[in-house]
Length: 210
Ligand code: DGP
Ligand code: NA
Ligand code: NA
Image 1 (cartoon, helix red, strand yellow):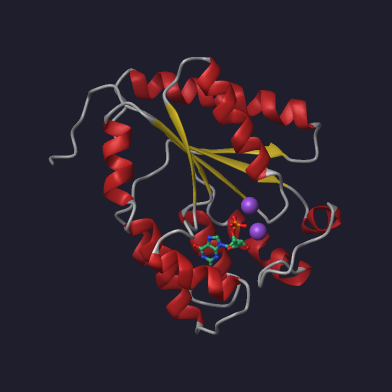
Image 2: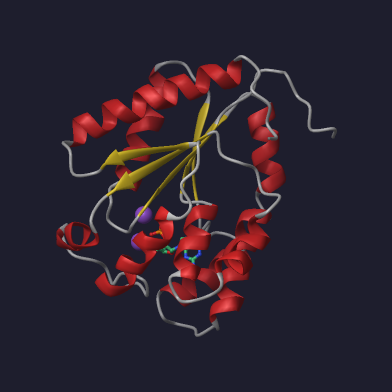
């Protein structure tokens, strides 16, 4: 692969944000919308708890196992790596992937624990770069009020505050930051607009690799 691809392809659209920011429901709504528009699309999420690496992550998240911070960081990353070639094949075959969490979660959640951010970024290098990152922006306090957190390891206000700070250092030109406290319909409308623009650029042959 020479990294030069001018053929039309699917888009890699990633949703990021704090726990309870509304990502999961908004990404679902976007997938339904794109389907209605006739865009070939699949809904994905990370961590993908269905693989054996994903099972280790899941057991850690529900506090059934203990792993040190570096180890779990590398497992989350491995969980993305094990899907990399499948993702590339889908994108090249014209399928748009709407992904709930990706490398930005990987870096933010681990750096929030105090791990060195450059160390956190390194295993993510070489994964596919998203065409669009929808960041659903919400104050940690507001997210915590939304029906409360579940019982998973990271769902605590103090920790989510640190995650929010880390996310801010990762913004790049692919990011579309949306105020998650606007009405559900207004958030959805903004996401639709950015996503349709993204899909059309990829159909025009935006390169898969930067
Ligand atoms: P979710 O299934 O989207 O609710 O994610 C489960 C939890 O794991 C959530 O608190 C976010 C966190 N998380 C997601 N991806 C990563 C990652 O790559 N690294 C770390 N450390 N945490 C992650
Ligand atoms: Na969660
Ligand atoms: Na979620």
